[in-house]
Image (cartoon, rainbow, N blue to C red; front, side, top):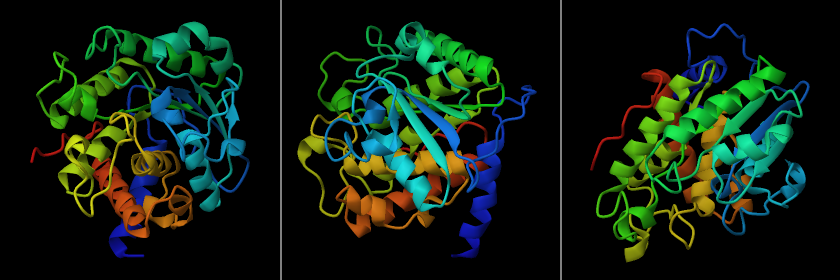
Length: 313
């Protein structure tokens, strides 16, 4: 392992434990270890459970699906990465396709509040509001309500927001939409601002998992293809599934790596190749995703609390 990689790991660990709100007086639980399993809950929709195989039902026996839907998804990929790293985690999911955090707060509060979770990850609808794309009002309120619900059961829980990603269909194939004819950068800037707003408005929020920024960084670095509608450039990874807005296998693996690095404080490039291979990825694309995750998390811990906006091409 290189010296720069060794220096990165303590920084990731500090970021995993620290609260994004310096006014918060709670002492958050530490990252997972080889000791007693940490209880980790993922709340969201298909941007976490995945769109299709191999991600949708991947390792579903490794997670507890509170809704009984039979999904494995990205939380199950995260679980396998954690086990591979020698960490003890007890992963549960409360995921409902096409739903907002407002839905989860209104309809699933009993499930979410049923256990004293150690870590909770909250993921909002991909356009923030189904009826008013780009409007973060309901998101901000629901995120605060869910954080309060979680902390009402375990005041030390670490609660994160999972930042979603710019959708190719919204930019290239949604006539009259908010981001039609604009760029992935434009949509990601709106999402980044909304997640930063929600994190700032919710007391004791632990931070934002910069998945969307990592995906855009991969595009800008030439690692992943920018526009799936004109084909995938040779040698580049394809971020999206066939619908061009959910992540495919590579994007989901990148998503899990960012989650893994931030929640555990471990180097995303230290997890080996096995999990990526189980998702059908080539070794080259596995290592490329790991490198993107390392760069993104390194930027996040070395800069301001909210990740800096990626540079436009």
